[in-house]
Image (cartoon, rainbow, N blue to C red; front, side, top):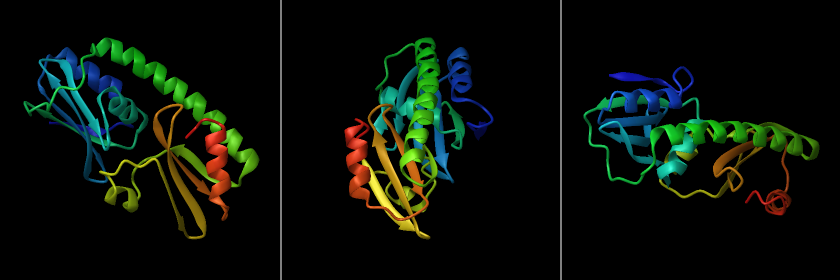
Length: 187
């Protein structure tokens, strides 16, 4: 059984391997042991994808951004209900572009927030906070909470259709933050 993390074995490499071997099975993705997504193959063709509340290509894109995910390939497993009808090679080209564009966008976003707010971190949401694991089936567009004097915000960014996690170093009025996100077309 093939298993590891996306930090050590890229999603693109996994897609190439599963399609190249014409296998049927299910790639399962986990956050700290909790199942959060799958990508199914039928005779080497992409067949299905799901990640929390996303499906199809959106789910694959989100998975591609999350290097901390653990994976396990279950050869011969039922690939689920078909929701993808895209060639693997086309998807790999799309994922490469998407990953590059997302990295560039995050860099711009970080510089924008650092100029305005004292920000501790800003990155793709890793889904590893216990609160998020409890809400894993929820369709989260915006979530905030205070922990250890810092404001944590997760929102679904419309520019890259991925959840962004921000930790602010000090308390702030999040109404202003929401207005700024909407003004920039991010929410």
